[in-house]
Image 1 (cartoon, rainbow, N blue to C red):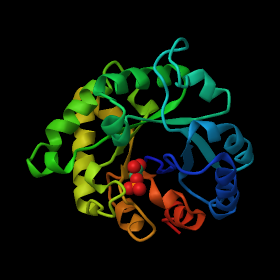
Image 2: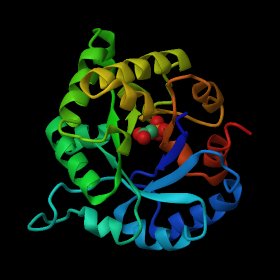
Image 3: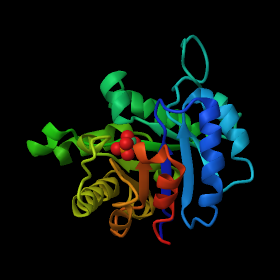
Image 4: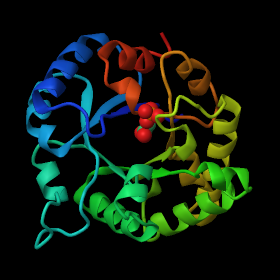
Length: 248
Ligand code: PGA
């Protein structure tokens, strides 16, 4: 059995003090959660939010990590810097980073290997654009993202995959539960081919893209869906808690 994981992705929202207020409101609402819970926050929020999460069942995540150990990479954040604040998860290859910041399958791969080496749990994002879906390229795109993004990964079960169809992110359009389940099934099958079937059966694969309190139950009821990566709905304590408590 795979343990579900619900993670918030704050993106470029919440100053450190706003973030602390949010997790303070969130913690009591999710303390009975049966799934793993995390918030992935802007790098500058990490020290304060890390402190605020002490004694809670909410883990801390970052939104990116650089692939070099250290050095002349102005503006970047290393895995060791994240680790020092107790960061557990790190989102890698989010479609916004692919779209706006030149992220490629190759850089996703380098970041993933670096994160794993440092003992962080990567949440590796994959997903097709609307045009790719409409022209029948979804499987081809996902195959490439997985093969190249995860090349050289030794223990597949040490990471989490997030399937986020780009057309469903922040648009209010969710993939239907059946669409999401089918596509995540394809991802699992592909991982079985690229790695091993046993590890593919164990790896947790989240759905992301306009997941909210209203649609989370149906999505989470799908066999292949092991959690959610939540953007907009993670910015309000009650909305995020309702997703975390999808089974209550
Ligand atoms: P959304 O974002 O829930 O606002 O669609 C999801 C994500 O981008 O991780």
